[in-house]
Image 1 (cartoon, rainbow, N blue to C red):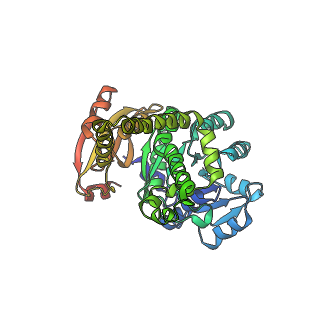
Image 2 (cartoon, rainbow, N blue to C red):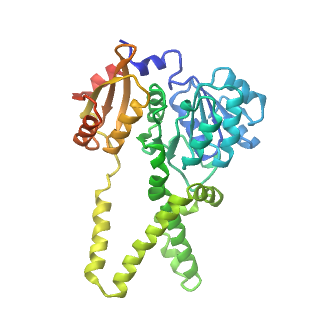
Length: 394
């Protein structure tokens, strides 16, 4: 019985994708292409960008095999000649036009994006694409204070989280293909429901950016009065506020795309800061100590740099009906339990039934995952898997 991900590799290039169009060759798009070309040199990559210097640089660095302006016939020719993945790494306000191009060309391959908000882009995909089920929203949680191709590098995603948002309409085979490609670049896939994505990233990414910007503004306002202040800021303060150096135009766009969730997060942040201020104003040492202790305990509980144990892999096998949304449902449960999926495969038993096999690393709460799956009506079996066995299976 052939495993699905192995079948995808056959005749499809090392990455599981033979031809990839990357639309928008800025920091994320260029870094993605650079990583793909480094990990999978046989994969053809088309760099699509409005800037001529960027296109020339993409070819010179070997990060793309071809380059085109979005309006060039070469873009359409690349798509119609067998492109099987379109990565939309352009700014959010440009995605509508790119969706329309792909739709007018009858594109039937997988489409993903890299923007940090999902509500609007999912609405556009559903309205414009003739096959919206082939859209798998994505969001790499990686960045740099440098923007554009000049800040790009092939190792940008190593150790970073890459969010995927499949849903009930996502074909079962799309997620394993995307998972395999993304993890081959060194990133770690996290699955989030589309409707939860924007609120989640507001808390862990968007609000922190505006808090960092606020801290820099605070220091800047006092720099003239205290000449030594900015020299002192070159230490831990500089590291804490590094993200504030990001593109103002980009972050303004992100803020308004995620206005409701960001506003709610900033309002909650205002309340948290007020709690510290009130404790100081009232001389309540016990309250201030408790607030600091809560934060310290939560910070210490965050995982350190993640290094999986190669001796503690676990295979989870789940018999399932071959129905829409089942892969998205299972992988969402895994992410909710903090479990990292190292690989995912589908064994087809009959035309209507299959066995979903997940190989998990030694992270997360496997017991919680088991309970979630059983409560959802799945039958589950767990078994230890040695690295040698996993290499043989894969």
